Amino acid sequence: MRESGMLLHITSLPEPGGIGTLGQAAYNFVDFLHDVGMTVWQVLPVGPTGFGDSPYQSASTFAGNPLLIDMKLLEKDGLLEPGEFKGLPDTSQVDFEAVRVQKDELLRKAFERGRDRVNFGAFLSKYPWAADFGLFMALKKKFGNASWQRWPDDARLRRPTALDKYRRELRDEIEYHIFVQKLFFDQWHALREYANGRGVKMLGDMPIYVAEDSADAWANPEIFQFDEDCRPVKVAGVPPDYFSEDGQLWGNPLYDWKKLKRRKFDWWMNRLRAMARLYDMIRVDHFIGFANYYAVPAGAKNARVGKWNKAPGRSFFRLVKKELRGVQIIAEDLGEVNNRVKRLLKFCGYPGLKVLTFAFDGGETNPHLPQYHEQNCVVYTGTHDNNTVLGWWSDATEETRAFCMQKLNFGPGDEVAGRLIAAAFESAADLAVIPAQDFLRLGVEARMNLPGTVGGGNWRWRMAGPMPETVRMEIQLLNQRFNRGGK
Picture (cartoon, rainbow, N blue to C red):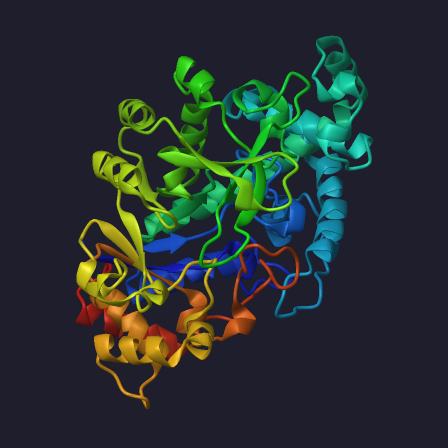
C-alpha cells in the first residue's frame, strides 16, 4: 500500500501548558491523521532530553521523557488534585526550563500519592534498564547534576560496595524516577494503542549513538571506546559537509564494535527490542555508522581531524534479522554514502531516504531527484535537520530555483511548498512523510533544528493550534490523487 504520513514531534503539539504532551492534543492529532487518510505519525526520539534540550542527547536511550507526561491525565488518575496543574502561558516556542521545573514539582506530588500503587518489582522485570537509570538520575541529583565523568570515583567507576550504599541512601529518589517512567510508558502505550486502532502507525527515531552523560554509557562502559579510567578515547561526528565547514563534532562515545560482536551484540539487541515495543516502525538515524563510522580524537576542537573506520556491517544485521523478525526499519542513509553503505543497505533491504530539498543542487545525477525514487524508499520534503520548504526556497540560488521549477514544471507565480509536497505524494516511494511546518506553509522561524548549533530556537517550535481545514482538504485530495493512505 502506498502510504503517507506527517512528521511532528510530540513537544510541538498545541497542548495547553507550554509543551506538547501525550494528552488530548495527541489523540486529536491521531484523529486528524485518520480522517485525512494518513497512516504514519513520525516523531523524534522520546527519551529525556539532555544537553541543549536535544532529543538526540538523552540521559537514556531506553527511558521516556517526563516532560511528555500529561498532567490532565494524572488528574483523571487521581494522582493530582483538580487545579494543581495550572499550566504555563502558551507561546510559539517551548520554554524547556520552565516546563521542567513545574513538571518535576507536580510529578513528585504524584509520586507521594501513587507510589504505593506501583509494583516496582514487576515494572523492573519488564523494563530492567530502569534500575540503573533510576540510580543514575538519583546520583546526578546528589552530585549537583554534574556529568557522571565528574562524580567521585566510587560512583563513577561503579564500585559494587559503593553502589549498594548509594542504593540504600537514595532509595526514595531512585523509586521516584522509576515511578515517573511507569507513568510515561502507561501514557505512551495507551496513545499508541489508540493510534493503531485508528489505523495510524507510530514511526519513531532511534539515534545510532548515546550521549556520553547518560545511564547507557555509565552503566555499560565496557562496550564503548573508553580507556581504563572510563574516559573517551575517540568520539563521534561527521566530516565537513553541506551543513558545516568544520564538520559536526557530536562528542558521543563510540562503540567498541569488536567487543560487542564477541558478545553477539547483546546490548544492541536489547535496545532494538525496546524500540520495537515503543514504535511500529523504527527510523535508524545515521545508518551509515553501521557500515563505517567517523572517529574524532577526544578533546579535538572540531571534526576536521577525524578518520573513517569500518563498522560491523552485515554481521550485525544478520543477527538483527534473525533475532528481531518483523521489526520494520527505515535507514536514514543521508551523508557520505559510499559503496560500502550502499551494499549494506541493499543487503538489509531496508528503505532509505529521499529528501526533496536536497534534490535540486548537483544537476541531473542528484539521487534525490524524483526520477530516481524507487518503491522501497521514504520521501520527505525535508527532515527535522532541514529548513522548511519556504525557508529553503528563500535561501536557494537562482540556479537552484530554476532547476527546481523546470523539474517540477511550475512557474514563478506557483506556490513552491505545495509543489514539493505534491511531488512527494506523486513519488514512486511507498511512503511520503511531510513535516507539519510545510503543510502550514511556515518559514525559517519554524525550523526544528540547525545542525552544528546548540540552543537558540532548536527543538522549540510549537503549533499555534489544530491543523486548519485547508490542510485537511489538501491532504485528502493528495491521497486520493496519488493513491496513498488508508482511505
